[in-house]
Length: 310
Length: 103
Image 1 (cartoon, rainbow over the protein chains, first blue to last red):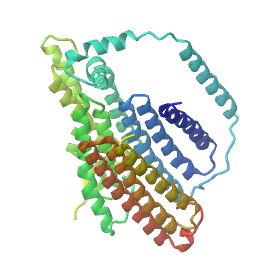
Image 2: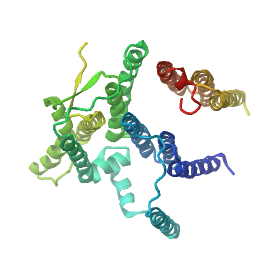
Image 3: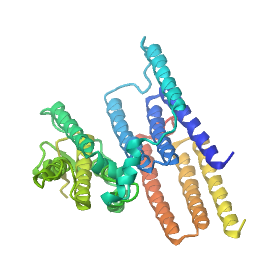
Image 4: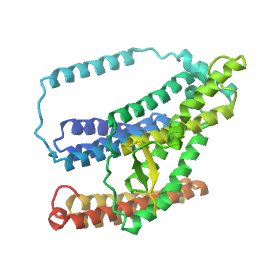
């Protein structure tokens, strides 16, 4: 048995074991930490499966941001006086749902095992046509050139999610976040060294995305990490209303997509036909900014953010 | 097996030993402070040894530089979070800090 197979088996066992522990665990906090760990193991599994784009996205979003959100929610629960380990309420739906889910997984698994290995027509076409787009990364090619409409609609979903959150928030004052104590110099030191580094990594991921793993979603998620850090340390404070810059940043991704995609019509080309690699860079940059600002606002539970005045 | 493979593997095994010791400390030590003590020191050393081992195995200046950056960023994150956890434990009082469950 080669080392690679050994690692794969260990990852598979870890995934099953962790998911069992998360579902059957009784202490909320421990389950959350295990779930974050679960995201990290999934990310490793994606990279073992040769999908580094997914691995990056899973590590940043699945483990990082979701983990931060869950820990925030936990803090609220505890401050609200909720018990950490409430008695497990048995739902009468648990057994049927479990059996049906198991059956679904089994059916999909059997179907996947029985499928003949033919190269998918769409995948082959993408790989054949990729050199014509000027992009080296097939994932970015699919996201922006071949299935641009899908990605544009994903940006729409993100925007709608933020608008929905704002609607639910109503006229309420932005949530007061529990902030890290600022009187220790280490936090400021962490910010001054980590923020520029995150920015660098985000821009690198964005630029690398055209030829190697990376892209707007991963870069946006990393930038969100920076935003979350700034919110948690109180450097960015939640505001009651969104400023003009915030609004522009939130719609930047969708706007760039729509303008360039529809602009193709004016030149007699099909909708969403991107005029060149510069358009890909432009749209990806706008998407990265929109993703980062939207998710940071969702995290901060606010309409806007303003820098702390010193 | 050439010399750099031997050196790299020895470094990797040593690094794993440090991680193992840190984890044993985390699981076995009684309170937050001694657990942090075990974890931060042993894990930082383990990370250094593993990064060094990988750099020796890779025999590439660029990879070695990137591994050094990874080590430094890991150090930064570990020290700041350990500091914050310790502060929180101290502010929360000794009764909370010596609770066996949550660090």
